[in-house]
Image (cartoon, rainbow, N blue to C red; front, side, top):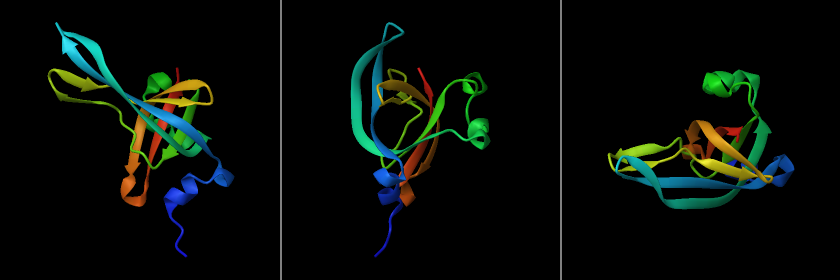
Length: 121
């Protein structure tokens, strides 16, 4: 039997917990962003305190804040600007009745998971 990484990161015995990834899409109207839609991805994965060795991946302004590392089979996003009239904000994560903003992402989807470091907001 082959053990897949996605099985491990979604295993409750390994610390997996449910959370929701929220991705806001904006359109610009007269130069101001206006929320157009929000995608919601219900998933589960391992959630851990961020290791000290990973702090170098986080923008300095967030390093003294509450940080958690999330592992998920769903790709995390730091946001994008696909064209001058649209943008996608960095993902937000709802976990344990708290809200987190994704500030660093490492994508290993070819191995079945994505990792995000997020700051509590």
